[in-house]
Image (cartoon, rainbow, N blue to C red; front, side):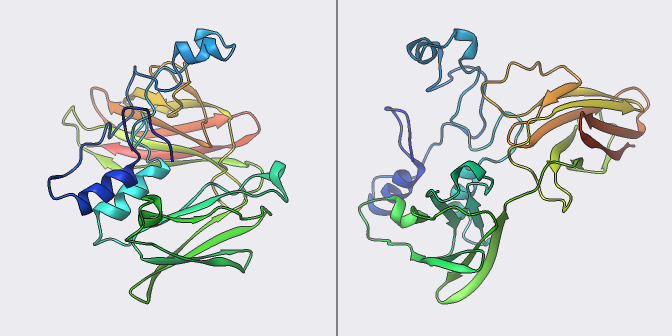
Length: 286
């Protein structure tokens, strides 16, 4: 809902493309977060809020995906507009707000559908439809429930298009973090020297649900012919080195990137943290 003074929110760009014949397309700054230009949380902002410059950010906030390549919520807004051939339904925020029981928590849904109904623990929170003629661009491209009274449980969004249901999405209140889950983008990679293995690190509860508030410090161990090419958690304010075998979770997630060394072969990756069950996964460089 916010942008720097020299930029616009995505919805405005979408609206102008629809209405203004002189607009040929859009330029997004940026696809990825990047080091530098930490708008708005730079040194000037930090000192103006009584913080030291070491508490300012190291990277931009503009990206559709973060420094690790993990999609932000905004990724799904772009996807819902850019790719009408794929049904997109995405709910935000997460639903772990125990300090807000009884307070209102706004809920947004990004979808290529034209209407959506939101349910909290089975009770309808109302049906919303996009208004393609609205002068308020956000009413054209997203569904908003600004007065949802928070209670733990499950949010479910049911989206429809031209009167036909196109799918559902849900988000749940999770339990305490129990174990680490490692999810590689690929199980098998070539020994070309340029292919990298991106492995998502998550803390999950006993049902396997990702824990969005987990901040555990993760330590990575590798057995086999591979090395860490980079590690990060996507936090613009993190000063954790990219060349390390440890990383704190940020909103329950982090990413480790591996490359093969001389002989490749089978590689076992283990992730551990105090208080959590270890996570393990195998990949193969061949």
